Length: 245
Length: 245
Image (tube, rainbow over all chains, first blue to last red; front, side):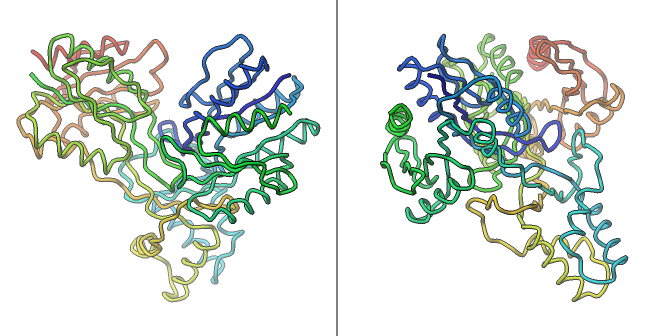
């Protein structure tokens, strides 16, 4: 048996010294890897430099990535090369990537110019065009600017790649929300499962995650709650047992 | 003798799951701490969870911070409580902090509204006002937005606190640029030294930092090049010897 696990949080470069980072310690991913390795399963583990890494093991191969583009390429490569019985996609992937940076002056110039040209309200297409115009890549944004305007573009959903390449693999997705009701969390998890063709989703709420507690709901593709756990260790065991049965 | 060292890179929260992070491994800071500890100097070490930490030592006290606000408070606290013979400020501090987030639609609405009201070009004050209006704090920005507009505000220069509180301490600042000439790097370092009342600045260029090389120029307050080094270890030794002589 062979599984692919993603864990940690991606970083998207703003310039050479700054990034937008999605927080994720990678601790839950490590526990999932440990459980699989204990059961003699071969694990490909995709993570970041910053995240906690699993303890070395002869059945474990770790692949480090930084941003969503690199993650996409790494997953394409692995999914085309190996057959996976399951993919556990616990990585916190950036939903947005910096497309454009403007100083307040520069941004003002762009919008005033367009307003003058159109002599009327701007449209979404106008803003999109402004964001696409200035393609100079900044090496390091000057710290002398008073206000900076950062335009971020939605990234493609990396999770959707998985079933496109391996329709027969068992896919476990993750959905993290912040301070919502259990019902709202489960409903959102169901919707994301349909969009991403996942077989299970582990739904969790940041407000219910502390050092020693991690409340997680495992939902199956029929929208049914498989089980509910209170710690990272128990969530890892639940996922591994569900995948292996 | 007692010194204060800052190292690592700060993170500014965008929402509960995303931050803007300044990259810094904290490796050079660790080497500087190690040299001081080896010479029986008491070290207060301010760093982040993510950065490399120095090896524990009875003369070392570590203080963890995340963002610039927390860094400011920690430095004020330490500088008011203890007398430092020197402060080595190697931390990469965020120059900008997220002030406001808009969806493309929300931002468009704001600027079109202002244009209609003014019937003429917008000014910097108008943009500043837009950035200040929406004060709703986002728990987690929805990933369904196509384009996100992030307004970032310049942070106060934390380094300027140091001499304000302890005018008699010896302050070593750091200046990192990316891919510039040696002359331009040294000139920028001199300017930053004057602004921040530093006694020395270690000027370095990200393009000249690799795994085994770290080119650094130590400049004194008269703008003279004290010395030039090729590795983190040699830079650490140079700084500690300069401070102790």
